[in-house]
Length: 306
Ligand code: GUN
Image (tube, rainbow, N blue to C red):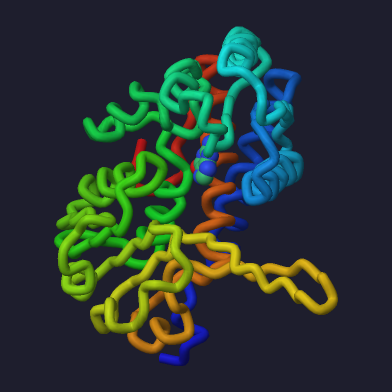
């Protein structure tokens, strides 16, 4: 197979999902005389977080979703942030609430996540939603693993009996990803920074999901021939020119794309792989929250879930 055919085009999948979501959000506006509404809170000035939030707001606007951006200084107190969330919880015109992570160290992420109304928790991080996912009865599923899962279902259709190996055990990606794959009958291994013989585990993977956050550390020696590789890492490599003082950077994944593509059956690129799918899934969850807010049925458009 030519290498170009091995690329899993996340941008294309995201556009196709958004094409299904747009009529749902337009019908919502016709029926309820307002657009679905997403509130995004950004605390501080983290450059990567600023870009992610900007892309989320832009995509919302393009898909008939109203967005409210709340920017708070990095010195903001936990109490102030919790108070903002409480106001959004009470506002019946706000359907989804997202607090961009990571938060400054003086604010407890756990407290913040627990303070979001589970019915507005479009990130799916609240213990109620997280627990429901693990019990096989999900409501809001975290956007990044949901996006990875969507692409895997489109590529493979049937995941029964596949060996899936996840690198990374975070609540944002690794753990919910494991739950999704398990519910689709994969045999799942979660590996992490203390895992012994990481390479051997990975070489056993029919599906390899990497969410480590270290640039290009997974090379071809970690890959089983014909594996499907999903690269969740978005790492900034600084390419600053000391002579001209020009500041530049390049985005790379956890996986050494040019090498791994020769061995894998399919692979997601960075950028243009998991990133656009994460945002499309956020739009999906927001429109779903809006329908639920009005006690209306929402026909889940992501395969495998009702
Ligand atoms: N930071 C990195 N990924 C995410 C995400 O999916 N949601 C939020 N809220 N913050 C993040």
